Image 1 (cartoon, rainbow, N blue to C red):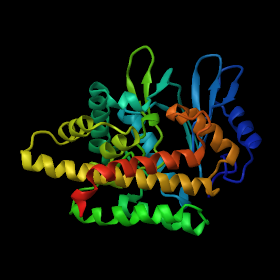
Image 2 (image 1 turned 90 degrees about the vertical axis):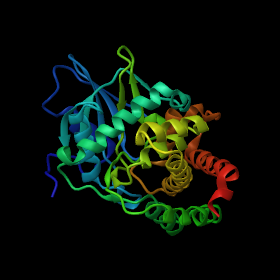
Image 3 (image 1 turned 180 degrees about the horizontal axis):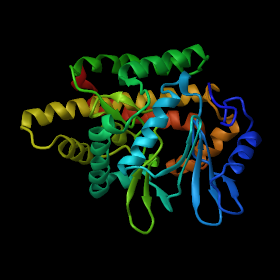
Length: 330
């Protein structure tokens, strides 16, 4: 049971903000400003007389994949490993981290080899050290099951896009047979370019936002970051070589075949999750989602992206990839 002194799901925004203001860690006067960008949680920038911080209120993720304990332990573990910002305060539904003066990556940033190489280095650290640093339960994440689950929930919520959704799900379902037994690792689970930050002065790159994390397929994160950024073929190839190291030409072609399958699966899954959120399954109101979408993805060609716009972007990316490579999977 959560403590009466900790945030609860039922609290209103003013109640959460009052709780934040009354925490014992602030030095002097506190300025608290809402920061748009979270699609499954609420965020604020808190500034006292000594420093700035990022405040995150967790969502109830049970409807769309992931649990509070998984997100919490991954966020804490990433901070302890040095791949994510340091957490200075933690409770079940509220975490406060050091503020990173910098920017979220844009899609084009993940088309640059030097950035891709550094992000893969961080992913490898996360995967290698997670068993040592993760202390709370984390869900098992199988992307094909997660995609089917998101489709079922979207249908249950009355999503108006189910004809398109079912067509895409039917195409990616057979990809599952490409993957045999493997050793699960901690997957970030949402490797969108906007979940990668670069510090302004040092240029240091950080991973943020573990809302869809889970124990899963090692190569999932590299495929997903290529899907989100609509990466060109040479970046796919760089990811596979950088992540897996030396391999034969035959093994490289097999890895690339799986990489493209996972890319397409990622695009379908994210489109479905966006449609689930559009149906009202989440912490944020429709207006909050709109503001966050515009803050995150306003550079996709439409100043008023909206959650449906994100779904359309992912669906279009799936069909683009399928048009090029679909025949190879029949």
